[in-house]
Image (cartoon, rainbow, N blue to C red; front, side, top):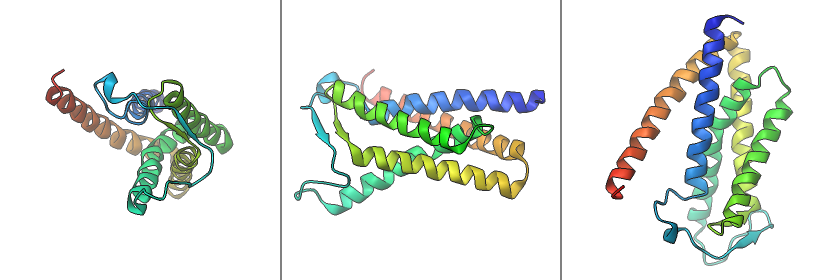
Length: 173
């Protein structure tokens, strides 16, 4: 592996770790800066796509789409990092990470363990994995695809960092 390719792969690993930390902050801690905002009773939903009748369908669909979109970039990055492995290993990573996130919400009593979220998160990861594979196949150069994705992910990481700084500033931290 050339030095430039190795640098891009290592950079992608760092960005994936950063993105995972950010996802945990968003999904587990709900971007909250106070523990009092997080405390709710523990709940488990093991029925896929089940929601209370009093919940607006638009809210449900928005949440589903957001979960898919949040995990799509991670799927792309994970597939880039583990491209030499079978796609099933990347899918297994996405499923496992989603299970960990949902389990943390339950164990810490700060959210609902929801099978629908696991399905949607994993689906988002699978879409990212698939998109990455299509990009590599179309471009015929994994390195060019990785370099482009790294650039986009790096810009995204800067943007996310700025949002975090703004949130911290306006929440008195």
